[in-house]
Length: 442
Image 1 (cartoon, helix red, strand yellow):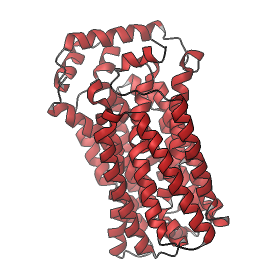
Image 2 (cartoon, rainbow, N blue to C red; image 1 turned 90 degrees about the horizontal axis):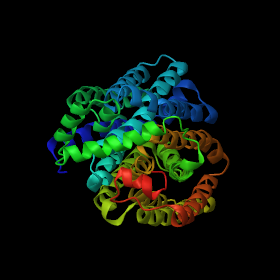
Image 3 (cartoon, rainbow, N blue to C red; image 1 turned 180 degrees about the vertical axis):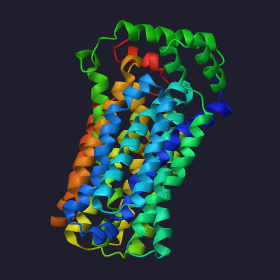
Image 4 (cartoon, one colour; image 1 turned 180 degrees about the horizontal axis):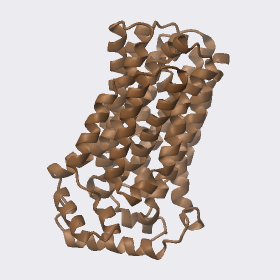
């Protein structure tokens, strides 16, 4: 299978959901002080404002497999784009705190759905040789979205819109959401989904557009996998047979958030403020961190199919453990605050190099076709559930002890180091069908 313009475009378009995902993740960091001022929010209220989007994300991630299987990955992504657009406009024109909560929940539905369906679509059109890098485009777009959000916050802050500049920060994401919706009309459906629906000729066309050279052989391989799926149609996901892929997906998703990555991204400006940085300086430091995230994610994408997923996870866990411990020491000692920026840059670099680049690839690879949609929903649901819990509690815990959250995050990354080393199989260069046999669930 060769890389064609259609395959590349389909990958990039599906991964635009990742850009919106990343933008939504990071943009809130620049709005926290404005939201607290406009609506007189307590630490609890601020945490709830951040976490309500994650509640929507949990719902979206848990339900995404249903429309994804019934209507197709591509068409379901169109609906997610509409949710993003409604959320952006609603938050921009929100008339009270309840409206902000409602529209952030709507946006969360889009984030959760696209975080499942985007990688799923890419994994199903990508050849095994390039799957890691192509699915990784989703994560690249996530970090591009994070960088764009930090840059947007900085520019809007400089424009001096006043105490309600948060409206502009939240509303501007409507532009990429509209572009995402339009571009989804220019890509083909997933050939695997078409075969599941017995639409073989359409699947043939989709494979041809994607650059598959041995079309009949690929169609037969997919058909065999689907026959196995039908033979096990009544099997529940939560059975002993699928214990290993469930463990892998749930654990990698949980560790992703137990690193503290999203809590740090959500409250980055507040973290800098607690260390004595001004808001404008915090906005600028956030751009540096977003740029670091992008650079190291791109680097990881260039080597993920050469060095494999497991090595990246192990190296990243070790590096994150050290950097997070350093942040905790700075806050406990209340000295050398200037090092905070560089320790967070180091943390982001190790995260992007490992967990950030690997999670969506790994979750998309470990489940067999017959339960992949449900399995990916479970992994993504875990990711957002842990995210919601940590992000809600972070401002309240940090108000009592600035260093305590980072001690917890550091210990979790140390635990991840040993778990990955002991239990995670390598998945690079293995077809989705061969992966089933490797995990003993063919």
